[in-house]
Image 1 (tube, rainbow, N blue to C red):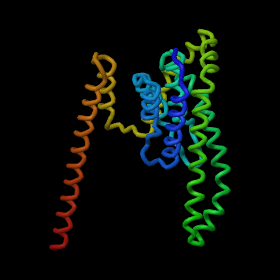
Image 2 (image 1 turned 90 degrees about the vertical axis):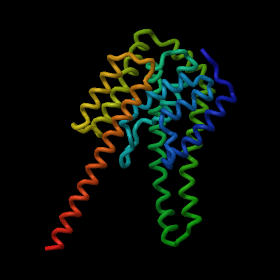
Image 3 (image 1 turned 60 degrees about the vertical axis):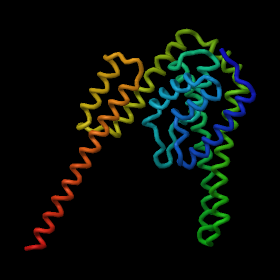
Image 4 (image 1 turned 135 degrees about the vertical axis):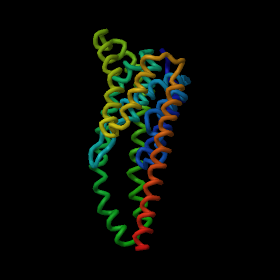
Length: 264
C-alpha cells in the first residue's frame, strides 16, 4: 500500500484542471481514460498501473459519449480514481474499476447540475451576440469552462489526497464476497464498453477482421500486444487503400460517362 503525498495531490489536481478544460473544449482529447490514467500513474510514480487501468477504463467507457442533453458517467474521474485506488490499496485493476464507478457517477451528477445552471448564461450570450459585444460573449463562454475545470481539481484533490485514508480503510473493510463481485464486474465492464462501441461501428463486412483479432488475442501466445496491434494496423491500411482505389475507379468511370454523353 502506498501513500499519496501533498505534492502528488496538488499535481493530480493541476492535471485535473487541465483535463477539465480539455473535456469542455474537446480539443486535444487528453481527457480520455487512456491518457488520464497514464498521466496519473506517472505522477504517482507507477506508470504500469496507469497503463493497465487506462486500457481497462478506456474500453469500459468506449461506447459512452454525450448525446444532446444527456451526460454519461464521467470517464475522467473513473480513470483517475481507478489508478489511485490501485496504487493506494494494492487491489488488482479489475477490482478497482468497480470501486471507481461511484466517483464517476458523482462527477456525472455535478456536471448535469452545472449544465442546468449554465443555461442562465444563454440570455447574456444572446444579447452580447446581438450587440456584437465580443468581450462579454467571450467572458460568458470562458466562465463555465473555468468553473468546470476548478470543480475537477477540487474533487480530485479531495478524493485522492484528503480522503485517501478513509478510502483505504473502506476498501480493506469490504467483505471478500463483495470485493470478488467488484472484480468480476470490473472484468466485465471493458467487454460491455467494447460491445456498445461495436453496436455503433460494426459492419458485417468487417466481421472477418474481428474474428481474426479475437483468435490472435485469445488462442495465440504473444509476449505482449504489440504484434496484434501491428497486424490490426496492417489490416486497416489494406482496407483503407482498397477503398481508396475503388473510390478512384468510380470517379474515373463517372468522368468517362460524362465525356461520352457530352460527345453525343
